[in-house]
Image (cartoon, rainbow, N blue to C red; front, side, top):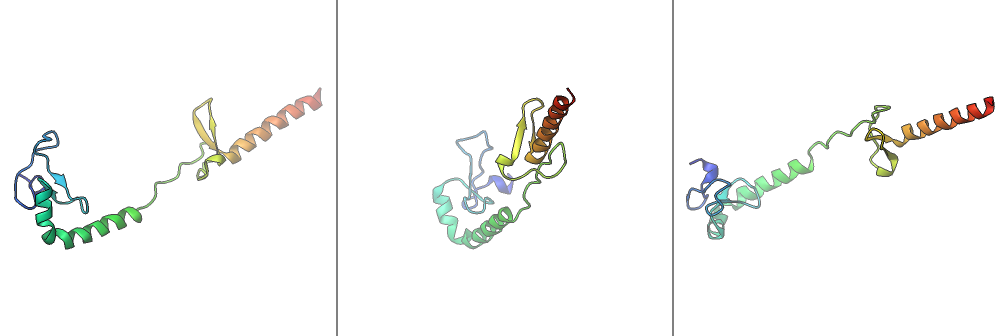
Length: 121
């Protein structure tokens, strides 16, 4: 049995994820050690407490300071999309979202084309 499939306190071998009856439960703090039940977790706590707190802090810090996901680009101007949803326009014709700047430029182009047609008549 691998170390990750053994109770950290009593050494009992746990089942795999499909074996709900013998499945070991992860420590809620560090997610590194497993226990066959609450009694084993409670009994092992004095031994595990210091390492658990350290690992939990590292885990939290890693999540806290992880690089944010990259922002999508506008498919028209290729600039990063705005954070605010009211500055993004969904295009039903193609299913894309474009930035409000490209949406406004498209509207100005259309208005200009209509105005030019009206003047030329």
